[in-house]
Length: 406
Image (cartoon, rainbow, N blue to C red; front, side, top):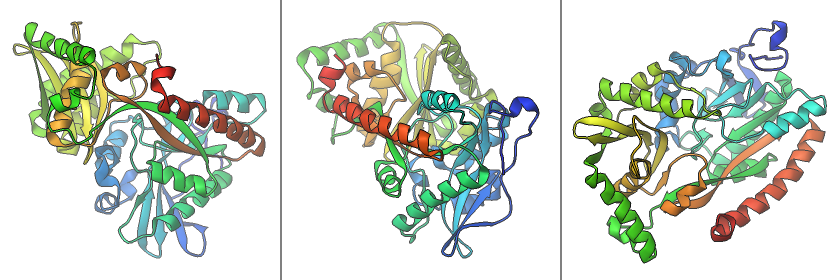
């Protein structure tokens, strides 16, 4: 089977996207069967949401993928064609994996443009490829969702082999698992996938009781700086609050979509991956899994951050403002949510990809993971050699941030 997406080699010649097979494919005889689904609606919502790992983060829920599909944010034209994978033992679904056939590398945040360039120079078609990922969400959480009672090691082995066989059967270049947990990355790497490190900046809760407890770990200069920047909001007459679930009104959704578009349109590399319908529908779909940090001057909203709230993690996603104010970004995106994590006893806060400037606001360099299967042995060997050196460099940076990021 040859699958082509817009943006992939061959699309210009009039090839249509190839939908994943609806029939059962026994890729993993004799124990497991891997099935491929062209829409999340082929998998019962209750069965998907009952899988282990889904409760860790709202963007793993069935409803999140359903909203992405229904609002047209993931579709062939955007370079994302759903290929959800389910693993079965007899008639029992023992695992599921959110997967997509990709015709480009946009919206992934594990950057492989150099790999695509090397493939092109070697005469290898890099697109389409298969990614196991949550679209547009560079956040660490389980990517292999396992049913209660299923042995993870067996499931991980089957998923690794299933990805290899899918790549071969579909005649595509590669499969990539993006932002899995450390445990899942190590398990999949143990079954032959190549492991890659990335670097983000996360806040970690060391059991703080109050915000002052947290500040106490820093120098007097740093504590005074942050207190001064927080006091600046009151001096400007700005109040910052967190709103969740039903507190997020349609008017606030309008404001947040405006902030989102203003921010992505500001940068040449910005992309409007999400549309207005997504923001409108995801709030009721995820309930308290969505929260908005809102800055108001009087009753007038002037800035906001759109976040996802997991069981033990807060994920910062989108930020924007209708006007510039000193220290507004730091307060809306960092300080306020750190204090909320302390009050709610949330273990970590991932404010998004990039940004070593976050270190000066209390975030720590943190290794993120991905694992990769590349079918062509020449390209695979070159990538593995590069990844071995990259892992050493990033581990060194994470361990010695005062040297790497001074």
